[in-house]
Length: 170
Image: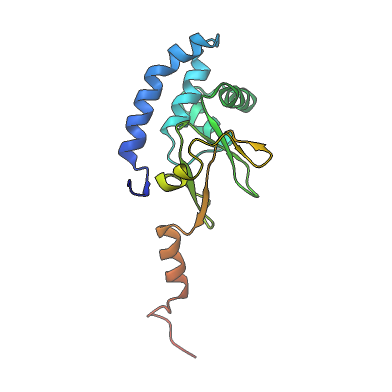
């Protein structure tokens, strides 16, 4: 039995290198022109550690390509989602976020800072393994979203609730 684990930086980097290496060939197979803008968007998406929004991807793209518009980035992201080059992760009460990892995985979300991390949970994958439907629904894919509090936010909350040693009680 495999262990539940967060996808770490090394895993993301290996995946990104592999995806970038295959990106051009997949685009050509699908009849999608490989433009500098599309390359910049996929690089920014794969370089991100936190399932970025369109605005965040646009800001990253503009660091090297200042003339790329937000509308262009949005169009490219939506096209990537349509052809399977990206996934839209739209969290409840949040803006659309994008994921360059199109392999099967799940997400853990910090409810305070809204950071999202990929997580592998083999047991969840096995629950629906081999099923094509669930009741009246034809299964397409399954992605579990876990709400949690990240370590950074836990520490911040702890600091907020710990009396400051320098304050004098009144």
